[in-house]
Amino acid sequence: MLSKKIEAALNKQVTIEAESSQVYLAMASWAENLGFEGVSQFMYAHSDEEREHMLKLIKFINERGGHAKVSQLAAPPTAFGSFKDMFQTLFDHEVMVSKSINDLVDISLQEKDYATHNFLQWYVSEQIEEEALARNILDKINLIGDDKSGFYLFDNDIKQLITNPKEASI
Ligand code: FEO
Image (cartoon, rainbow, N blue to C red):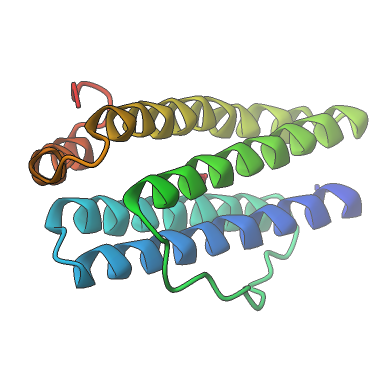
């Protein structure tokens, strides 16, 4: 059975994952409008992943006798400046999510809720990967600089990351 404190903290994470999904959906739409198919596909897929993260939390809260709440979400931005700005926003967002997961892990230990602690380890690993991926993409964008043909290739290469995020050599 979840304590009220853990239940509230997990529900806060449900909102964060749902908002992440919305932010990446907005990025997907922005990139699609600019004609960058690869980047938009990557963002649509990323948005779906965040929804999965949210659903996993909802199932866990309800399974443990809590009540997962679906709450109102903050509206995401509709424009993101440049690709560099957009991926910087993505990276900063993931750093914020990692901090939130770490705080949750901390609360689970304070509450001696080892089942929740165990459950959260999946998110801890996931955040390491997500931050590394975002950092990797930012490095590539910095290498491309203002080279338009470089962006065309990048848009094509990023499609690999959708099906094969770990092995891709983008
Ligand atoms: Fe679910 Fe990208 O954090």
